[in-house]
Length: 89
Image (cartoon, rainbow, N blue to C red; front, top):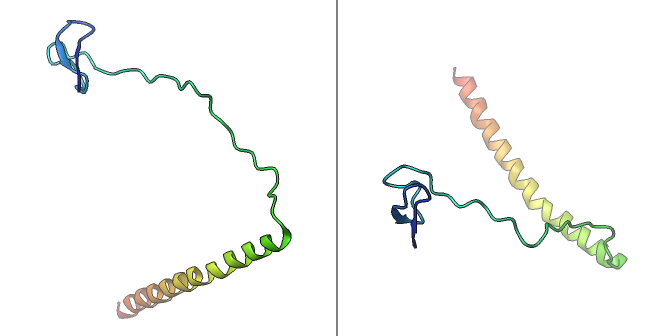
């Protein structure tokens, strides 16, 4: 935290204050443009040996099984829960 002077009335205030306590002038610092320009990422090709790509795809395929089972169980139990609510009314 630092003390700064209000641009309008020159009252000393915290640089973290939202406004000057005396005159109410908003206390903000305009955002400074970044010196480094935005960089874009372009994927042109995945340079990976064929069998490494096959292994990669198999691992992702196997990793989806627990996710699908988990979502299926949630769907099954919620479906049964809501079906029992409808059946009772």
